[in-house]
Structures are given as structure tokens and as C-alpha cells.
Image (cartoon, rainbow, N blue to C red; front, side):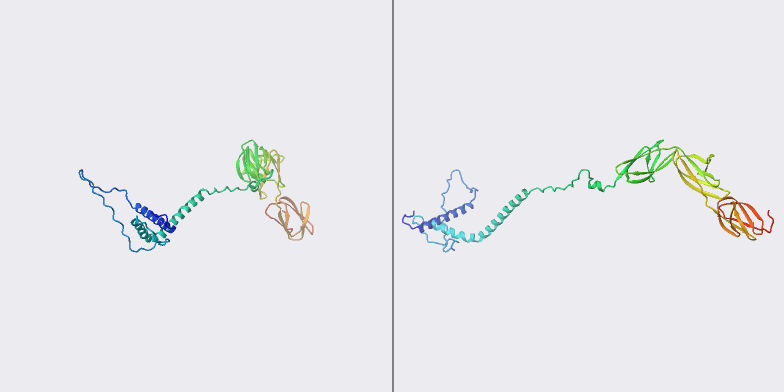
Length: 360
């Protein structure tokens, strides 16, 4: 025991030595093992007496402990051996501790960084807010005003077609759409050529389609009348079939478009005309054949008269004359005349008068 009259420095030295001994004991205990020692016993033999452990050798000189300068320690006379062994053990463990302590500190720092950093990263990912939905602005459409998609769409309308009799084929701008009665949607705005074809005849109309509206077309398909007027007599045929005119020069035909041929073989006249007949109406075709030419010559000076009108003197070249029969008179200046009935055709007409010969 330490006497009461010892100094404070001596008490501190004793406490330091005790702490060092306790640290040594803990270090030694960590190296102990729980495996029991092998013991060989017999039934009649008694256990051998225990031999006390040999005291640890105390080195003659040891390096001083770090951060703890070696101070003189007063050891009581009663326990000198234990204190000396504790001091010697502390000095022996000081050198390895100085080598491994920096490495252990660095390893501990790395582990701490990994643990703290991993925990921070996990919390950051777990607590990350979900991406907010992006609101797409929708343009407000004022009442009564079309939307942008509707504004880009081209305006269109519809057409309702009916006929009597029903079942007529419907063609719009040359494209077939079905048979009547029929409603055609999505037609462009404007004028369209509509044709109805049936056994009773064909009808052609021009219809105007307005935006977002339905135009109406109702046709009665029945016959119409064709009247032909011509200064010359002509035969009228269609598709090789002769059309017989009545005393009013009219013939009844189905409505629609007709391709007619007018022919006068005697005048070498041949022409083709296209007419569109409307149901129940009279369609007039007036024929105006192009004029031909007349040339009159004589062996002496003479005047030329056509249908009672003086047209010139000989030689008379390429006089424009209508097709058909004409009265021709050639009068000589010295007196006397010659009369002819001339038939002018599509081909040029030519006449030569010889007053030296008797009229024949």
C-alpha cells in the first residue's frame, strides 16, 4: 500500500502503472483460447501438482513509450515484481503499436467514408422526388371559332343525287361513285360536272357544292326532242343508225349527250356534231355548212350573175358561194348570154364559157 504521506506525483505514477497493467492483461486475454487442454488421467493416479509460471524477463533497456515520458515510479516494497513486469510489458508493446497505429487509423477512415457515403447516397436516391408531370398547354378555343386542326382541313361539302327512274350511274368529274339514290360526302367546295347514265338516257348537270352543306340533284330521266335545221338537205345518223325526222324536222331521243353525223353525199358534205338533250325539252341543232368557191372564165369579156345578182366580170376567180344549187348567167359585152344551173359542192366549182360555139 501507498502511505498517506506520499506526494501527488507518486500517486499519478502508480495510477499510470496500473492502467498499463490492465491494458496488458486485456491484450493477453485476447490471445487466450477456449479449447480445453488435453489431460491424461488414470483411475488411481492423482493430478500432478501445478507449477507456477516463470516470471517474465525484464529487458535491461527499452525505448520510452510515445506521448508518455518515463517517470520515476515509487514501487511499494510489498509488490515490486508485479509493477516491474507491467512497466516492462508496456515498453515491449509500444514499438509494434507505433508501426500499426497509422495503418489502422487510415483503414478506419476509409471504412468510415464508405459507410457514411453509402448511407448518404442511399438516402439521396430513396428520397429523390418523382419527376413532375409536364403539363402541355392546350390552346383555348373560343366558342364559335374552329380549332387549329379544323382550320387546316380543307372545306368540303356533300351531294345528294336522286333520279327517276332510279338506278342511274353517277359520275362526278368523270369519276364513278355508284347508282342513284346516292349521297357523296367530302366533295371539294366549288363547281362539279355531274353525269347520270341509264338505259333511259343520260343527263349532265353542273352542280355547285358549298362548305359543310349538302347540295341536291333530282333528275327525271325521260326523252327529249332534237330539231335539225340546215340550208341543205342532210341525213342524220347516230352510231350508224339513221334518225327519221318528222315534218317539223324533229326526232325524239333519250336525254343526255349524243354524237350525230350529218351527211349529204351529192354535195360531198359530211360533218359530226355533239348535242346534249335535256329531258322533256327540245334541243335545236342548226347546220351551217362552210361555203365553197366558184371560178368563171370566158373567151371574151362578159358579166357574171349569180341568183339574179351581178357578182363580177370574167375572169371571176374563187368567188365564195354557199353549197347547193345556184342560177348562173354569163352576159357578153357584144350582146347575148348563156344560162346555167350550177351545183356547188364542198369541192371548188369551175365554169368556162365559149361564146364562139353554139349553146348546147
